[in-house]
Every structure is written in structure tokens, then in C-alpha cells.
Length: 505
Image 1 (spheres, rainbow, N blue to C red):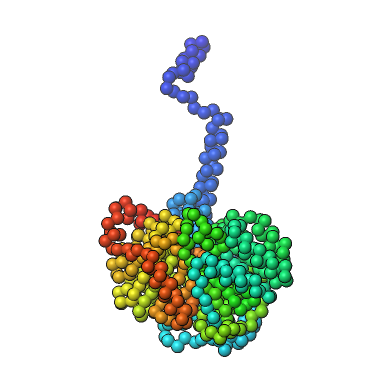
Image 2: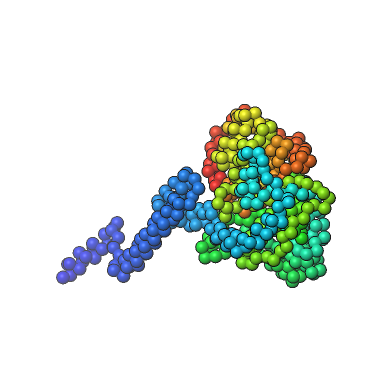
């Protein structure tokens, strides 16, 4: 007995041999393994169900394949990413818009009857005007006065003067609102009008304006203004859709004057940020019946944000000075049945006979836009694209180099604006059409953001835009095919890698 005990002790003491876990020690490990297996099984189940959704809803075959493969191979990482970034339709907003159309069909028909004297029916087959009006589901309207507003001082002087003149109501919507000098100037102007009895509605994007303090909103509300974030995640089915943003910038005064363009509310938009001096941007003031298109866009967004339909007048009125510009307010976004912004740009480029000039801070076009630009240049159209020399995103800067060599080879001229940071979203087609709005030339504006553009057919306004863009080109350097191809190999590899992130840029 004693010998056997000694043998066991010797065996336990042998070097290099670790005793196995006892039953009590092994049970937590087995429990953890079971929990991990259960979580993994659940992740694969969610991955499979999400991949079916991707199969049915992802707009491109490449995107569908990428999501399906990742959702079924690495579901722990891919499923949360898909719920946040994978959706291309804002389904809740789609349903809301259908309800509005059904509920207010008769009222909408009455408004259209009143607009009839201002409606311009496109007569040219395949014209961008025809396509634009069908995408917007509202017509081009004549009887408008338009004013090109270059840079921040001119823009906000005009907006604040318009707010000060408001007699009935003011609608204000911006993607970014800051509590700084400019932000407080706008707030104070709205507070003054609200206290004077003017109805004020103020809508902002909670992601773009994430730093806006509660005190800013409180001052407006205490004066009687109604204030709300857009609430893109409102509703149980939308809690993870952080990828949708409301990028619109709209001001409407009394239904007869409106402002739209590239500027948000912050001191940097006045060129006061040392990091981005010389801020270059463009806005548009419109007076006349086309303002009702901006008002309709705001109404739908407010209905989503607060579940309230605004009681607003809808009587169209021609511009007081007798101007007769033809204007279409074209909202676009992830609730549209088609990719409105991308199709608008593609048709404008395809329709060009002499020139297409484009200015955009974020130029990461999709295949449709790239093909349209190639074809326009190949048929002899003067195609020019102005982008910032130093964008505010390195990812965007590198991504642009993934395709500029092909565009340059086709004859597209690409110019990099050097006199500051260029943030305007403007395009020009021949001598027929100019667009000023909020939509960039990238996937986010084409498919993920709520945007709005004003399309203007007016010879004098088109000439103004052409002169403005020509002046911008004087402050730009033109890219060359040789210069792009001379970049080192690592640079081109980084450009291609950055371009892979285009769906979320």
C-alpha cells in the first residue's frame, strides 16, 4: 500500500506532465464552448437570412455577391455591418410617402390645377428637362426669379434678410448646424421672427449636427419655434440604419422665396476655419412657384421626423420682378423608386451637345456616370470636372486616382481647385441648363443621402454659372495623364484600395 502511494506521488511529480482538469474545473469550459457554439449557430442563421435580404435588395450584382459571401462566411462581423451599411432603401420613408400621396391626393390635384399656368412641358424628346420632371414627379415651372449666391457671406446675408422679411412662416433645414458665430446669427434671427408671431420650423440631421448643444434647440423652442432632428433611426425596423443621412439644405420663407445649395451653418462656411481658409461654395435663391417643390421636400421630411403634416399654404405666385426663369426643385434619396440623383446627372451628361462642366468636392462616380462622361468626351463634348486640390478626406483624394487616368485618356479635363477648399455642387449643360444643389458626385449622394437640387433653364443664369466656373478654373491646375501615371506603384495600389470603399464614401 505504501509503495503504491509512493508510485502515484512520483507519477504526479514527473516534470513536464500537467494534471488534467477536474470535473468542477471542466464544466465552465464546456459551458463556454456550448455558448460559443450557440452564438455561432445563431450568427450563421442571421447571416443566411440577411444574405437572402441582400440577394433581393442589393442594387448591384457585385454588391450582392460580396454581402452574400461575407454574411455566410464571417457572420459575426458581417451581420452587424450589413444591418448598418447594407440597406439601400429607406423603407419606412417609402411607406410614409405612399401614405401622404394617398391621403392628400385630392389636395395635391388642386395644387397642380393652380400650378397649371406655370407648367412647362418639355417638347424635345430625351431632354434632361423631360427626365428631371418625371424623376421629381413635379413639372418644371416658369415665372421664377433666380439669384446665384457665391460663397458664404453672400449666401447668409441673403438668407438672413429673407428670414427677417418673413410674415407667415419659415422652414429651415440643414445637414450641419453649429453653435458658433454663424449658427447663433441664424438662431437669433429665427428667435426674433418666432417671438413676432411668425411660425418657424427647424430641422437638422442628428449625425451631421451631432455637436449641436441642447441649449441651442432650447432657445428656439422657448421662442415658439418647432425644432427636430431628422430621426433616421425612428421606428423599430430602422434602429441600425446609421448610413442614411439627410444632407439637404433648404430655407423657405412664406412659400414664395427659397434657398438651396452647398452651404451648411457654421463659421467654416464663411472661410473662418484656419484649417479650411478660402472656403468656396455656391447657393441659389429662387422666388416664384418653384419654391413649392422645396416646401414639399421639407414637408415630407418633417412628416417623417415628427409624424405631423404641416398646415402650409400652397398658392403659387410668380416672381414680383416679372422674371420668367424655368426651375425644377428635384429632391432625391433612398426612398425613391429609382436612383434619382445618379439618373439626373447621367441624363444631363448624355444630353450635352457642346459642354458639360461639373464642380464637386467629392468625385467618386459610379459606373453609369463614368460611362456617360467617357461617351460625352468621345463625341467631342467639352467635359470638365473641377475638384478640390486638397479635399477634406484622404480616402476621397486617393479614390479619385483609381479612375481619373481613364477619364483623361478619353479627353475629360480634370482641374484641381487650389484657392481653398471647394465645396460647391454645381453642373452646367451647354447653354441650356444649370444645376445647384446638395448632391455630390459619389455613391453616398446617389443612393444613401436625402438630397435636393435646383435645375434652372434660363439663359442669363446659365451665363452667370459659366462665368463663375470659368473663374474657378482660373484658380485650378489641370491634371495630366502623364502626371497621374507617373505616380509610384504604392500610390496606385492605395488608390484602388480606397476606391473599394466607394459605397460608403
